[in-house]
Image (cartoon, rainbow, N blue to C red; front, side, top):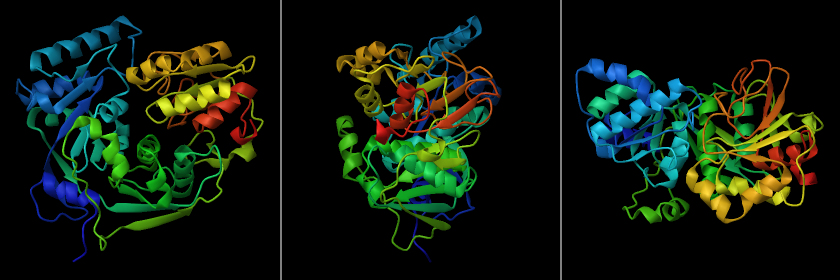
Amino acid sequence: MPGLTISEKILARASHAEVVRPGQIIDGEVDLLYMHEMLAMALLPFNEIGTTAVWDPNKIVVTLDHWVPPPTPEIAKMHQTIRDFCHKQGIQRFHDVGDHGIVHQLIAERGYAHPGELIIGSDSHTNMVGAVGAFAAGIGATDTAAVMASGRLWLRVPETLRVDIRGTLSERTTAKDVILKVIGTTGDDGARYAAVEFTGSTVKGFPMNERFVLCNMTTEMGAKVGLIEADQVTKQYLAHTGRPFHPIASDEDAAFSKTFSFEVDGMGPQVACPSNPANLKPVEDVEGTKIDVAFLGSCTNARIEDLRIAAGLLKGERVARGVRFQITPASQIIYRQALKEGLIEIFMDAGATFTSSTCGPCFGGHLGTLAGDEVCISSTNRNYPGRMGSPQAQVYLASPWTVTASAIHGEITDPRKV
């Protein structure tokens, strides 16, 4: 009998089984549930269940991130409903406006997620948190209500797809370029309901901020979860939590449904063209494409390391005439760090705008939606029609290096030439 993968081991522990196999339905005990504004949508089914209290307020984290600050009276009322519920239920880890962040980033930086845990989030990019070696999966409002009430969730054990990445990248080339390359190969449904496990020398050499990018965009592969085996890098990242560290690795004889091998030695920046993350081209093939908007933000690429890249390129430069460059940090902690390091002044001096932490521009909600004839280069994770505003807008996905270089030149630009 073959050994177990990381995800299979986590689901076996969560369901109190010695072994689980792909296709099996398990009833898993959830270690952590986290929510954003989806909580408001989950309240109706939660109330219909007939319970009056959440299963364990100490295992729930809530923040406001999609509309921050609220742009309409209706959204303000939604936030008020969420505040009242968290207070009534005794949910101490409620991060209100001012202490907020895009929820996946907040979960990671506050050390709420640890290796080996079954983590459920009310958002499709919960996959990102799997970079710490957890099984982190997104669910909808009805399932969220069920977990709130019971602390349990039925899950089908996914097959595991292995992605082996080796080689040394070209300068100014990042994990964003790597995951775009992977998606360009697998397609945006090539890992449908799979657990995507990353391995290889390139992955092991990535710091945590880059590992989060890889796992985040497994969602754009159709995956249920993305995972990276926890190692010394993970341990150092989580050291501030003071919690015991128990990494889990796939067995040497574990069964993988498929293995993709990528040799990225010398690979340069990549760009996903409209209107699919898998519509991939090397940056050289789209250089010179005029842009109206550059956006650096989202749970994918708006950590302090990304902001430092932007500031390094922008210092002493100006955003191109006719281009709007918006920078939105992934959390208030990152915002404060950028302020401390003087990055915000560099952004403002260059003619960029810097906003509160929010998902708003990424999903076309508020604080920077696109008009029908506009072209945007973005560090976000999706460029489907209408994702960032008008369905007629054209969105290109790229790394912070490429986004910032393009903002300076007013057209898609190879950052290695700046």
